[in-house]
Length: 84
Image 1 (cartoon, helix red, strand yellow):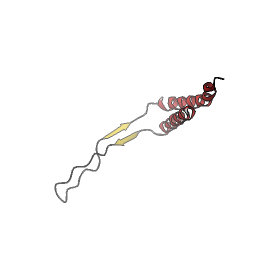
Image 2 (spheres, helix red, strand yellow):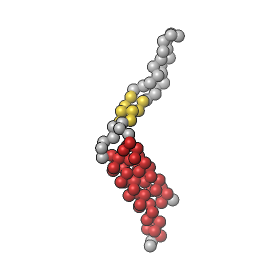
Image 3 (cartoon, one colour):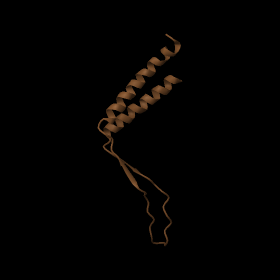
């Protein structure tokens, strides 16, 4: 069970690093419930506030390297648990 958990965490970090390498910036749009229009012809706002995330240049490489190290650790974990 521990091996699968650490392997999943390592794969997640590895994929997050690859995605940060390919993405220049990400914009999060918060969708609050829009207020009801007061008249029939008035249109309600459809989007809430926006937040832009720009990953620093070191983030992809550190995420990918940490993911690979955790995956490699998960392969040696069962041997350590048995006491070999």
